[in-house]
Image (cartoon, one colour):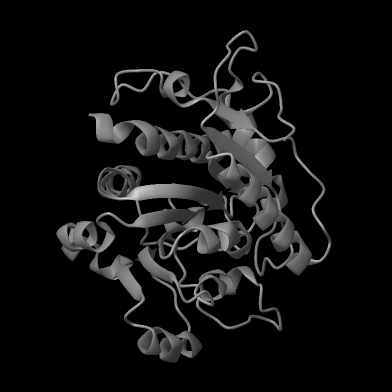
Length: 294
């Protein structure tokens, strides 16, 4: 696998620092089906650039997590013009990473990347639980004639019978998605944004206990006041501390086996949104590898 140098990769660590990698950051700026605001193809580049400003020391974990994790960044690669072939290519990349017993964190791109990212996990594990952060349920069978639309991301993941999903922050769902949701209620658990003050996180802990988990984070899951840099921002969403609390519960009680972050549409001159996503990526990796040690 071809990596960027430490200095050019995620976090911008000095090239003199040698480590055995445990995690691979994969830039995958797929943008084919966005339906409102565009720009997700620029997401990976801007997240990596912003990560160079993230403080390496984590005051919560009392260490510089990157030294204990070992993070390499894959060189950007050509994305096939066919969305189906592009997703297949992404699946093959994650398959290579898993064969090396490493942890993939993919930076999108639009949310349609997730079914591609997930392919090798559905083969490796008997069952896989999708931990899904989003404003939208993404359960449409297709949108504007495209079955691999970003609006169908979770539906395509659930095409695999060994996949279940726990969603947080949902506050936008179409009437056409409701029959599928009801029919598959045994595989879909939604913590609706409207019920945020009443969320039973003990129930979540029980749902996720000892499971193999793939984490997918659409940044419009965040409230639009802190994350307007996305194609379909929605008010009434998640804030930073409550988001980290959910991820910590997952890290402590399950086996997070891979992750992706998607739907950042950078706004020129507003670097704070890119920085937020970069810090989120570092937190996900830090909790995955270090939180159980606390």
